[in-house]
Image (cartoon, rainbow over all chains, first blue to last red; front, side):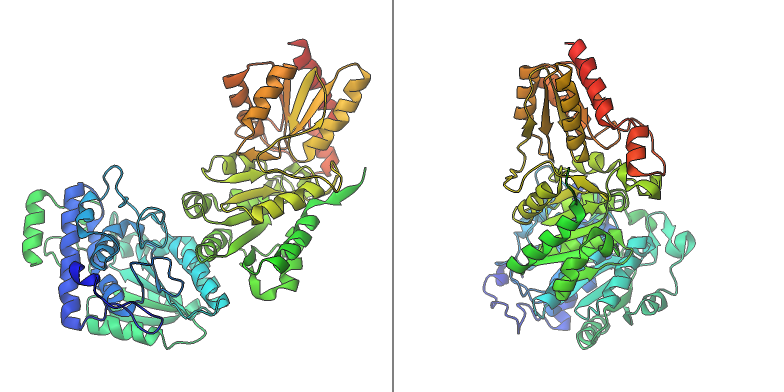
Length: 288
Length: 311
């Protein structure tokens, strides 16, 4: 895939550079998951669980839905992706590498001294990273600003912000939610990677967020509830999102933490802990 | 002395800048009639957003607009612009270097009757601690207009602290502000007062009193706290040999701490500090509070005499 990037057509306001069919999206998601395992195992630290849960959503955005140009990261009409759950940096780095922002080999430098791939995302270091994140709850506010600028400049780009469900415990998320509705930002799509777990356990036991979709709708958002691992549902949700007018859109994506690796699924241990060398080998076999 | 409101000057300057630069966007956290950004809002309603009582969100929104090419001014009271959204300032502006200007009004204790909840006396320490921020406290309305224009035309995050009450004019209309360059507003050879904001006018009053007692007191307006004019501080230390630092702020982390670091490193001389020490103030009229907290011309003059004796 990485080699094909260089000959792909230029993205324009009318077209994106990648438009993979669902079968290839599934293969790409697997490839990105393999990168997550290898990167975090090599780094010796990081957050594989929440990266794996978001892999299908991120794959759909970068290889089907979004318009962007890796050769021109500041292209004014590009769609924006903001990883508000900044600890899931490995999935974003994997997608950026495979879409041509930087060499795939660079993924091996994750979290190492002088690497462009910091533990949490840094907009000044990594090509394609729109915002520095890592302190939870801030990305949606940034997305509101980006979407507002789109309205002011009469550009039709879309701003996608990926949140985690645990992140919705931060009060600032709800400040941003109120303001997006107030400013009628129908060019803003928030996706909640609802993997139902946070650092120390199940979200419902720590700080229950349900009914999460109803909360967003009560804040004035158009809500879409999907299985976040089913590409037909993911793509349909993004297509529906672009048809909504005068309201921001939230996609509540029901996902599984650690998705794709049997012993990592729904295993809270892998929120902030990486697989051992042996575990990584097993994980990679499962992801072949 | 003529007294003019720095925040009113800010509001009017923003309108002027908005006419020239269509890329300027202004945000406020529902205090625009007080911060005076409502002038801009009336003139350019499409480029003005009331973010409601959401200071944390406002900083993120400002960053998003700035990342999309806008020059963003965001205003609220100094107490909310610093303490309420510090991690947002750190993550979204300091760590990114985005082009957002936080212009906060109602700084210091001269907010007065509203009391300690509304008196921003930690803000300079907080903002100066953030890498990449430029921090300015203008001495009067004329300097405010100049500083706001320079901020609009200089890329990167800025914090400008203004006051609630009208304040005496220190400068005349022909004053030219240079970012990061201290201004000697009065000459003197026996000691120097390095001051910011409303304390510059107080220092000038003190210098008048001291002159009658035969003490020549230099007054330096250190309008830019960060980046600090270290060269000017080293020069003052070696030329006059005794320094008083005066600020409407807590003792730690503000101008006093910053100047002392430079003096210690370059030319150690006797120093004294006029500030709010390590405690909160109380409700009252601005002048009453300044007197109660030891921030008057008389307090400065006494401090100057004490450092001169230690030379």
